[in-house]
Image (cartoon, rainbow, N blue to C red; front, side):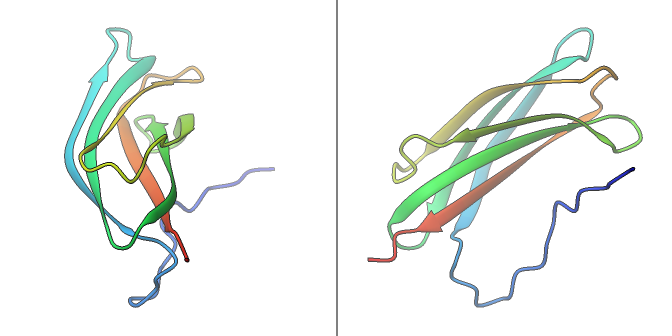
Length: 109
């Protein structure tokens, strides 16, 4: 059995279920052996009060296959100038690229 995850599902233009995220800085530092990577990012959120936010870091090999995954809840997403710092590890192959995905849900009060 094989599967290929789809990381970019379409979102309708006027969809208000998720807030917009503006990445202001992204830095990925690969370890010398390319089996882990340190991810540092700064971002801000656009829209009404934030209810919850989470980040997913995915590491890919040369063929573009996911080889590492890390997820975390963002502790205080309502802060301006949010910072994210995480490590992601490979399941074996060398890491070629790393992508950051952030999902933010508004407070519906």
